[in-house]
Structures are given as C-alpha cells and as structure tokens.
Image 1 (cartoon, one colour):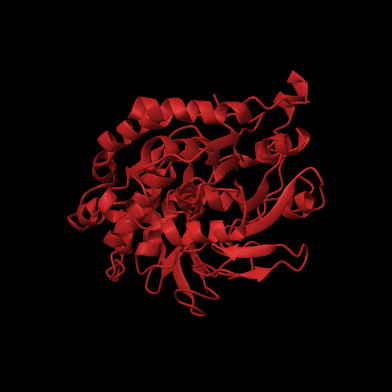
Image 2 (cartoon, helix red, strand yellow):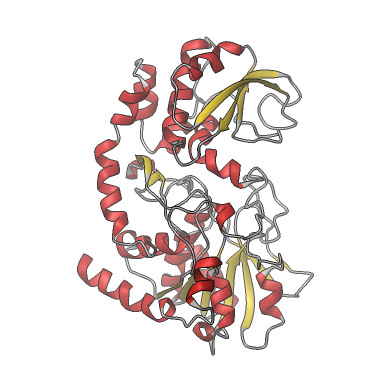
Length: 411
C-alpha cells in the first residue's frame, strides 16, 4: 500500500511543483519566493475554473504585507468564495485557545468559517456547505509539533478528502531551518490537537513537506493534493535569510527569535512554572515564585552549545503568576546553528527540579501530550540526567528522520 500511496503522492504534486518561474537563476538564489508568490505569478493556473476556499490567518501576507485574501479577492483570475479560520482566527483577533466563529469578513464580504477544534465529518460538512471545489492552505508555521496550525492542516486535509475536495498547499519557510528533526516522537496513544500523528517535537519540515508526509503515511485515504513550492529557500536558512516580513502567527509568537526557542521551552506549559506568557519575551523568560539565581547558575554550568542563561525577574501581565514578580531565567541564544532547543529545554527542566523544591508538573500531565509519551516526565522524576533523557528517544527519532527524508522537497 505504501508504494502505491507514494506513487499517487508524486503524481498529484508534480503539476504544482513544475510551475514556471519568471525569475532568472540568479534571482531565484538571491530572493526567496513563497508558494503564493509563485501561484500568483503563474496566473493562479492551479486554481483555474475552481471555486476556492482558503485556510489562512494573519501570516498569509505578501512581502508588502497585504493579506493574500484581500489580494485574491480583487483579482479576476481566481474565484475566491470562502475563508476558513484556525485557532486565533482568520484576522487574528482571538487569544490562545480561541477563535473568531462564523462571520462575514467586513473587508471583502466573504463568508468566514471557523475550523478551530473541528475535524472529520463535522469539518467536512463545513467544506461541503461552503460550496468550494478546492481548499488552499497558506499559514506560516514555526517548526514545532505542538504548534496547532500543522494539525489544522492535517484535519483540513482529512476532511477535504471526506468532502471530495482538492487540496492545495502554498509553501512558506520553516523559520528555524529545515536541517534536522529533533526531540521525542509522539506515541499514538497521546494524540491530541497538539500532536495528531507520530512526528518529532521539532520536525524540521515546511508545511508542504508535512502535507506530503501526512498524505503518504497518516491519512486513511489520501486527498488529491498539490503543493506549490518555494524557490530560493535552503534547508539551512533561518527566517531572516528569507527577506520576508514576520507577522506573529499567534499572539505569543512575536518574533522569529521566539520560534527559535519555542520547540523546546513550550514544555514549561506542562509545569507550574511560567513559560513567559504575558511578558515581552514569551518562551525566552521562564520562572516562578521562589526561584532565584541558582537556576541560571545550574543551567550555565552545563555549558550547553549555543546558549547562555541569565538570572531574570519579571511580572507576567496575564497567564501564570499574573501581576506577581517572579524569578527565573532568560534564554539567550548566541549561536543558533549550534543551539538545540529540545535538549536545552530538557536540561532546564532537570535543573529546575533540582534547585527549586516547588517544582511540579501540571496535574493533568499536559507534559505527556507535549512530549508525546510519559517518558520525559517519568525519567526526570526518577532523577535521570539530560543526556539520559535525550538518549531515551534516539532510536525513534532516527526512524522518523529516515521516514521524513522521503517527503522533503528542498536540498
């Protein structure tokens, strides 16, 4: 079955992969072009004759920060008839764990449907009711398994198949590079909206590559899929090499620097420490009441590659410890090529538990959903070192890296 599925995948992606580019070879190397830029430059030929609905959010912008929905709505070459909003909403008005609901967009008059926490047949029914023929996906990801937009992608692909719709993914860069997968691989019994399928914590893939992986490995029946690739992107590129503007994909992802640490320090959501929500440096500032300089000192003694730790004090304006001054660390990445966000976060969890007697996991064991199994929590509780915890996922990670390699689009 795998061979036939992969053959189908290759056939359905070939047309979009071969879209002509008007740039010279020198220009392609000098400037990245997103999937949307290539789609528009080709006159939207992939969408010709189709009623189109698009899954997007505030990150779906052109390089001059016009929203692609506004651009497509006024372009007679494409028939855009519906918008589908994920967590935080299409225009981005909702905080974490919220969405905008069903409404008509004031700027375009287009109907906006809410996809947040919807999947399977209920989401397929929304696609059917919208009357679209093709569903387009264009959202900026940040490279972490528990960032929910990639599972919006997965759920929409699955529901599009159930509804008999085509699916087109417009690619954007992974802002923290596509060099290698890192961290533990999800165990299926821990599947949730922060991880539907067994991929690694930092996946090192673009959304188009993930769509190919989902279609080839995880969907019961593949959806008719086309991907519009970028040009000018290399796997070693960080976001600042793209020349693209950064639009926060969610309220607590203000900069590409946040994305750099997020795939590791988001694990602190699974503890009673603040992960920095409610500060100007979410996921870089970590702390709690009763923590002092000893945590930064203990973490610094590990001499982890690419990162320093500074004793820090801060008062979150919302979320954990709202309005109270707490102590902790600020994560300072000084060599992003050497920095391993997942291993660094494990080291911070291990040292926090050693130096602060108040350390605790969230009672709902949210950490298990974030890491994808009970292993990290139980090993740290048993006194395992950072190296021992990391070694625990090595074999599964190696297997995922081999699988991942079959779906990569860029060298």
